[in-house]
Amino acid sequence: MAEKKYFGTDGIRGRVGKEPICPETVLKLGWAAGSVLGKGSGGKVLIGKDTRVSGYLLESALEAGLSAAGMSVSLIGPMPTPGIAYLTRTSRAVAGIVISASHNLFQDNGIKFFSHEGLKLPDEVELAIEQKMGEPMLVVEPDKLGKATRFSDAAGRYIEFCKSVIARTVSLNGIKIVVDCANGAAYHVAPSVFSELGAEVVTTADKPDGFNINLNCGSTNLKNLTQVVLANNADLGVALDGDGDRLIMVDHSGQSVNGDQILHILASSRKRKGQMHGGVVGTLMSNLGLELSLQDAGIPFKRANVGDRYVLGMLMQQGWTLGGEASGHIICLDQCTTGDGIVAALQVLQAMVDRQLSLYEIKQGMQIYPQTLINVRVADGDIGRKYDLVNCRAVKDAVQKAQGLLGDEGRIVLRPSGTEPVIRVMVEGADEGQVSQVSQDLAAQVKTASN
Image 1: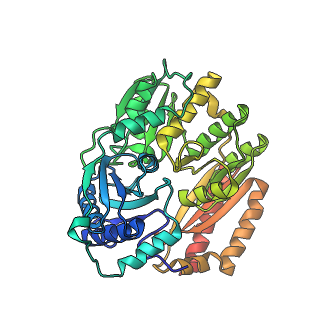
Image 2 (image 1 turned 135 degrees about the vertical axis):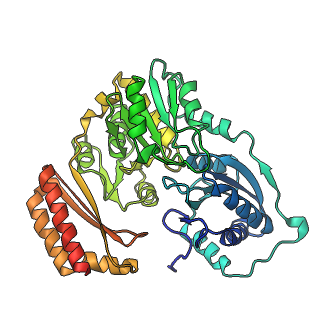
Image 3 (image 1 turned 60 degrees about the vertical axis):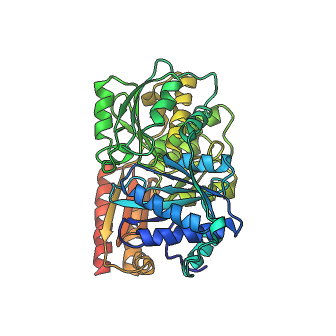
């Protein structure tokens, strides 16, 4: 398969003003995508975004490019990524586009496409768009230009969908929740979902200004959320990221509950209720404790490559419905076509209500094994060179020796980054001190081999 210049594993991302995220490229991208997806007969494309200031610029460029290809555009404004996926498949749009760089700070932005089914575009469609990008941009006849309209009831529709994923008999009355909106796309929908289901809601990081998205808040920085949970004597906290597709939680004691623990809670709840369809998909970085706890419960577990695209692919291949990453990207395929932080939080809350347990209590069934991750910076080079480095004899011998020290209750993963000149060295095991020492030794060996 040909290499893609623009599309990565998670759409198109970069610093705004540098390739590939610049207005001229995005204009051409809108035209190319419209030409391929519309197949010459037009149609409707939804465009949503998060709250970063560059979203206005990229939205306008995409809108112009799509119109030039004869595609009509429905502008949604700030909306979580999973909300765009849901609205795309339920409004019979040809495709949906999200302008967001997820958990990154405001300087970055990205573009993600969804098919009419609310799934990521197939490789062959992305390649067709790539090829179209290399052609001259020809605008359709004036009478075939696309129009742009506002999707006025998008927020209300998505809120109602989120509320529908838990049983009508489940009420959140008496539960106090702090919702950290990351100053991102969920700021105007997430609090309403929880409050309309009966919870007492305290909000934080819910005042986006275009520049403060993910800044000292959200799923990548729990300090503020933890303080607000403790100060308000809340039952739990919910931390979303900038585009609302990730979830990390905080219990009443201020302890974090990551994606692996959330997967364990959801899988255990479904198993208890006879609703566990197949097994769970994690990633190479999922904690060993998740795998062992699911094994004890008789729930199959498989590891995919890191990235929600790969988790989703393995879920569909296996015919399973539950998967995710420790970073909080939780996919419930029986509810959504992509990761959804609000939906995942509601699933956890339903499990708590069903069993009359607090978040602190319900998470206890899984032991978290000590895990250390070190990013070893190496000389710039293509991804192939980094794979060669990981597989060189000196590094492989060091890994084999370290694995012998850790035994059966330990794991080592050396993973070249696909976006940075680094090799990620992950070590986990039962003994925290040993894990720390082994990871440092391996990182040093990788660094030596790279010189």
